[in-house]
Image 1: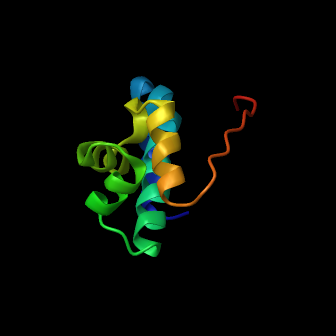
Image 2 (image 1 turned 90 degrees about the vertical axis):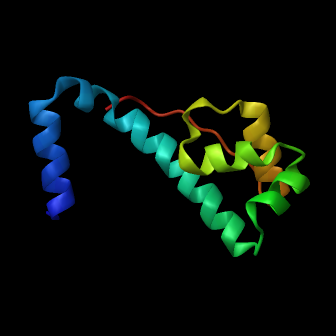
Length: 94
């Protein structure tokens, strides 16, 4: 187990609020990372993507930093601006 994973497990055990919010925060972070990587692979700046997606540049920045509070319609426009398709799934809580 990596040092980071050990730290996370230790923190979850010691901090109930951290443990309860960890998964949600991780998924928000993961979406932002996926958008950033797709934008970079497309060779686009945040400004160029915002123009393609017809959203304010701040939305791209906010999405890449923390996707937690973005509207689904804005996320769909950003993904479409990357010539990608947005797929949403549901899974049981573990």
